[in-house]
Image 1 (cartoon, rainbow, N blue to C red):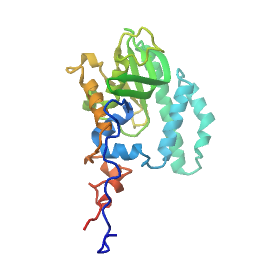
Image 2: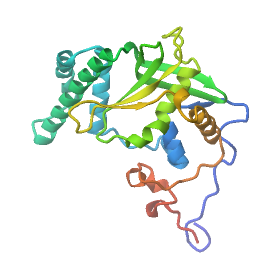
Image 3: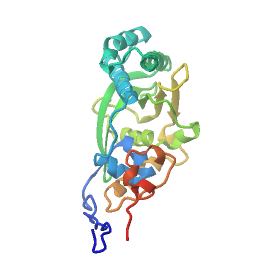
Image 4: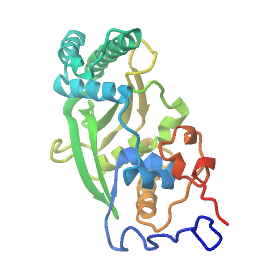
Length: 277
């Protein structure tokens, strides 16, 4: 309290950059879009300001585990593995829990359809849940891909399995940040150990398993080399690395603010503002 009994405004606890000028900066492909959208939210959530795991997230984790354990499975094999493991979700007998079971069954069925579709299109599976770590300028791109496939031309295709109920608009795919950063990692040789001799990036895919579509929604980002601006993702990685190493992190209003787990710490939100003198 100050002398008048009002809350005192605290000075910043740190005013230097998070990284030194010569330090490498870890950049997660899954966090690039978040940082680009709101640097403050990225900082707070990276520092532990996240909500607890929801039932939908637990279901998504289970589907990813099944996709890893039976990577080339058909519908029957995947359904069998789901039946063996779904008990860990602790679902009861109510209608909400029954809908969760049905949703899980629909997702693994669509996963089986995608696996068959990839084969007919001439892509072979190289790895699942594959870690990648590669230096791109100052950035250290570090992440894990759900599936890594090789197309008929010997190019690598990163596949990201999505279990959420919504999907990005088609017009957003060409500049989808996460896919673009993974393509940068491919071009930088990040998967050389598991795919020696690969001839570059063949694009990247989002495979939507959790939407209301009856079939898997496959959304493709073309290879960076075929884009009108082939270096857009490389510049994004460089800019984000510099921003993540900085000393200040601005809050940016966007359509996801209402769902933000750290809105109570955001100066743009009424519940997050500090009341001064």
